[in-house]
Image (cartoon, rainbow, N blue to C red; front, side, top):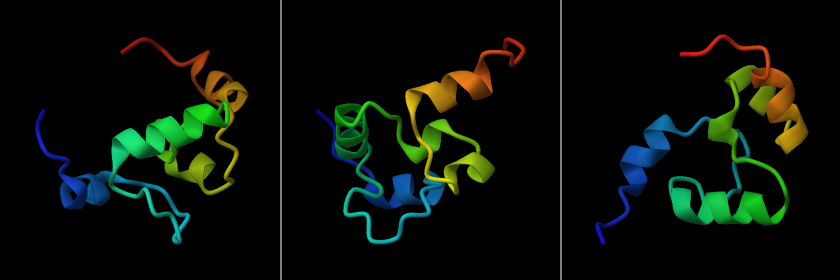
Length: 69
């Protein structure tokens, strides 16, 4: 298994919750948020992330009508 690239991950992390101990440790962040039935910040556009509504319902609302890549 390769090592976590925490500093590189932090550069791409749009999470605005500053006291977060999982910032840059994507595997821990994902596990944490899935336990809460939500997604991490990186699943959302920055303007939505700032609302802290990271629910699965919000994710579906945002992306259900988006054109396919």
